[in-house]
Length: 367
Ligand SMILES: *[C@@H]1O[C@H](CO)[C@@H](O)[C@H](O)[C@H]1NC(C)=O
Ligand SMILES: *[C@@H]1O[C@H](CO)[C@@H](O)[C@H](O)[C@H]1NC(C)=O
Ligand SMILES: *[C@@H]1O[C@H](CO)[C@@H](O)[C@H](O)[C@H]1NC(C)=O
Ligand SMILES: *[C@@H]1O[C@H](CO)[C@@H](O)[C@H](O)[C@H]1NC(C)=O
Ligand SMILES: *[C@@H]1O[C@H](CO)[C@@H](O)[C@H](O)[C@H]1NC(C)=O
Image: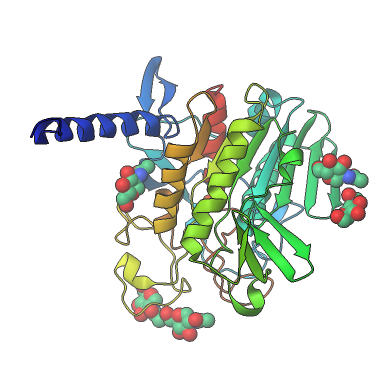
């Protein structure tokens, strides 16, 4: 076997590659340092379980002045309350309780921007209610223009902004029709003005027929009628990651990507064969394991973050997929302003308060 690889060296190469990949993956999977009882603890706050906590929820949704009718489960008659009473408990450490006043003071003068589909609007709506609760009587102004809503907590100079973008990459109106261009990300010029930005996209990638807001798809200069949607998703994320590497000033802007938000329409995923929606769900799954496993889109997202971003240009994964999978009870189901069955979005108050709690924990690290 002169000049060729011996099987030993192949094994060694594979082994070093896996070490290399593990190092890369720690660049986005958070190990946070938590002070608790005077001791510093390192832990992954996304690994844990839901525990019943009488002191929850963190706010009373009937006192929040602006909850979109898609998410306002209480107003639209949801009768059970237990889903509001769960706190996320990481396995390795305790995290500090969410403190909206502290959040506003630390973020003084900053713009926090959520970019993505309606799940981003949902996430933003929860943060709005959490901060509104803390801001008391202080002045809040709201400005809506086109796809953007900006709420400013004037006394603190903190703005939280939501920018609706279903795919992150562009849809361009051309002579032949609407073209989803996987290589182009024009709105990035606005996004990079943020001090903290949380991206998300997934919900729209498999839409077809009248619900699909484009006619053609462009990839690397080539226009076609359609392509494998998971490949398209991966390509768009790669375009986005390249933009993060080249255009974002990481000394100004902290970049997060929200993990894939799970839906609950398939009871087999939580060992209830025959169940086709979340209408009868009032409790979370116990423990940390979701029988349905990790969604493919979540694997694709993690692969892109691992291979296409660099530790010096970090993207922090807000890794909420597993903890949200356990919350089959957290969706509006029929208790929303449209009276359709919704096991995709989340009730406000509810699970998304925990996403914001974990965002707060990440920001406390001064990353
Ligand atoms: C809204 O978008 C349109 C078209 O993109 C633009 O002409 C207009 O100035 C925008 N309005 C605001 C208030 O930014
Ligand atoms: C519209 O919102 C964007 C993003 O927040 C902002 O940059 C722009 O100044 C706003 N335009 C107007 C007319 O308020
Ligand atoms: C939701 O599931 C229940 C039972 O699990 C079923 O009776 C109902 O028809 C379903 N509703 C919708 C809109 O799918
Ligand atoms: C809903 O849940 C209750 C209690 O968990 C159960 O007895 C009932 O059969 C369920 N209904 C449906 C339609 O799955
Ligand atoms: C989430 O679950 C997957 C398996 O379903 C596992 O590989 C992964 O480590 C879990 N992540 C966290 C943060 O618990």
